[in-house]
Length: 167
Image 1 (spheres, rainbow, N blue to C red):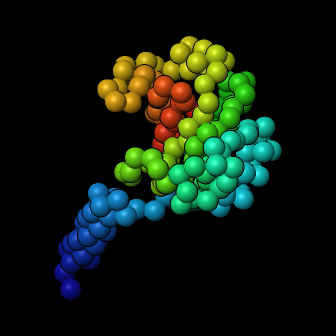
Image 2 (cartoon, rainbow, N blue to C red; image 1 turned 180 degrees about the vertical axis):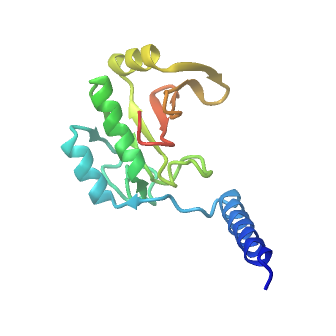
C-alpha cells in the first residue's frame, strides 16, 4: 500500500463526515448539544435567582401556553445566568422550548433561545454594553453582545439567542 493511501482515506472520511453534518444541520435534524431536562434547568435557574412565568401555568413542551425548558441547551441556561450576574437585573423568563415559536436551527424548540420580560434595568444594560445592530423588520430592535449572542426587543419581551454561554 502506498503512503498516500491512508492520507487519501483520511481526507475522504473527513469530507464525508463534514458533508453529513452540513446536510443534517441544513435539514434541521441537528439536535442541540448538551440538551437538559426541564427539572435540571429549573433547579439551576432557581439557584441563580431567575424566575419564569407561564400564561397557561404549565410546563408541557407541546402546549404553546406553557413555558418549558425540556430540551434546552446547557449553554442557554448558562447564558441567561451569566446575563443576570453581569447585569444585576431581575430576570423573568416568559418562553423557553415550548411549541409556538418560529422554527429553524437556532430556535426556541432546539434550545437556543429564551424570552425574558422587559424592564428598565435590562434595557439600560443591553443598550450600554452591547452593539446596536438595527431594526430587524418583522422582529424588532437587535443588539449583539461581545460573545455574538443576539438580544432582540420584540415589543413586549426580549428574544435572546445564545450561541455561547457568555452573555
